[in-house]
Length: 197
Image 1 (cartoon, rainbow, N blue to C red):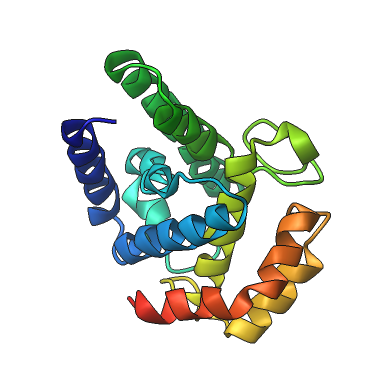
Image 2: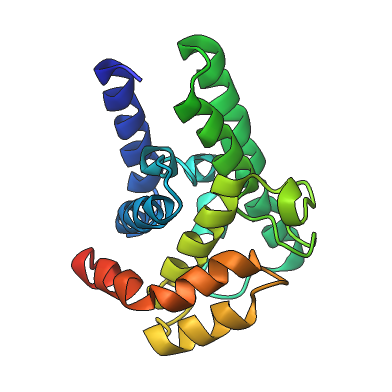
């Protein structure tokens, strides 16, 4: 990816997270956690994570900022951010050209809410059908969402979050990746503490 392309994508990321308050820090932390996790498996791609939630620019304020539990209809609208992000990434791919970064971005934006048991969205993919990068981002994304305060919830502790996520191995998350999370939990905590809201 050229320097111009990198700068453009960084600006898109900032725009996507200028709208919902406090999500810019979330993006940076997920990117750092992904970079750490991908290094564990000899890969790369943390830049792609900067746009994992870019589709949220298409979600109405009343849903993004709602200080309470979403109604089923509202949750249905919220879930569309994955498709919006994937479509946006594919359009960028068509203009900039195909490369590893953009392929990862299409996978991550579109599938970071899939579940290992096939009960996720938007495509209901399961197990190895889910792109590997999206499986890793699912771990990083949920970890940071749980340990961070939001308008609709208080922050969970690192310990509570780790327990929840490890128990989700084989249902919500790739079981091998939850094993890695269990081994590297303190590194996740340090990243969270370094990139505080």
